[in-house]
Amino acid sequence: MAESPLFQWFALIVGVAFLGTIILGALKMSAAESRLRRGVTLGRRLLTAEEIYELYFEQPGYLKQEVLLLWREIADALEVDPGLLRPEDRFGDDIGGGFVLTPELDTLSEWAADRASAQGLDLNLQTIKTVSDYKNAFTRPQPRT
Picture 1 (spheres, rainbow, N blue to C red):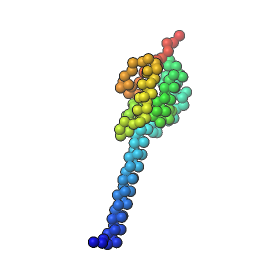
Picture 2 (cartoon, rainbow, N blue to C red):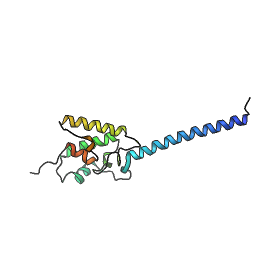
Picture 3 (tube, one colour):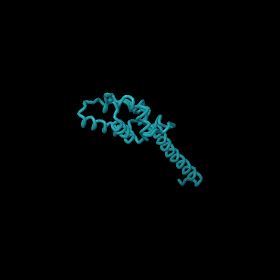
């Protein structure tokens, strides 16, 4: 039984609309995940490395080079501008999150494990919840002289 040309056009239009909906939904999910991955960093003032150190780490006496190296490591792994990070940012919630565990958080975990091994630290990665926790796991304030 031959189908009418009108029915064929209708089926084609419905099929294209269905496919378009799926494609737009996937793009929307990708954009939403990207926003989640950036998290609370949206709308923040971009700080320079010097400002980050002066605001958060100079008074406690952390070595500038060590802190900024760790700071940059976090930013690189999470694909976030380091000037947007803050010590209280929580991994997976505020930054580096998505609908599921992200490759960026996996990368940061691998780097943390490698760093802990190289420094001879027995580190439970589950205890590192924030940017500050990451820094504290690998560096300490220097005593004032």
